[in-house]
Length: 286
Image 1 (cartoon, one colour):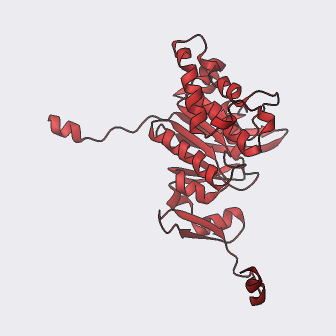
Image 2: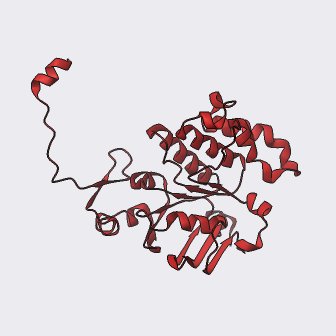
Image 3: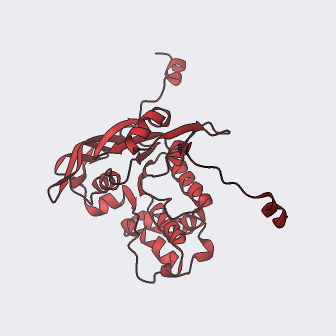
């Protein structure tokens, strides 16, 4: 093969950073997940979507190792999840839960420093101060740096927790509804960070309820309902009006963003009556 032909050859696809194969979870006799399989590779954002109670957060807990499977397998970097020590897992995957679990009055800086714990007594410990500062800046938390976490709003605490997992510097990010407590600006900021990490070669798996955000930022979407994977594909393949209407048991419309062309998912409201504002009310406010 010539050098030019070799240079033109596409790079082989990255091996999956995590793989779930035919996983099932039964808790107190109730089947929560059944025959669930999916993969996520370096360089992509994979969104897990589905109705409330579909099993999204349970699936993420399976991937983090917080919830054991009753059947099937989970692998990280080609190795069974249970074969990694907790410290090894801490160097490979970082987890952002819906509840951050920090109740003591640690400052934002101290919380972010906790993300460096897996790298203690390694050469990378020398980077701690710089990495913590960068993570705080990236999440826009500089002015809250010395504030106790309990004194912050829910959205500010969520951003501090995000800074903590960024400081962990792992190749896999697992995010459970990271935009739930955030305003529009910070929702965009968080998912832009997630996308940037994927573009830099990380693997990002994120649970989302906002389907339009999933369309805008995910490379691939896994739709879950009733504890099973309904479909797995690109946003355009998954976010179709007939499928979403069936799964969510609500008629929806899928339109296109006028600038980006990504899907916008909205409930149908054809039966809604228009809100009429009397003309004299408008005059009084001018």
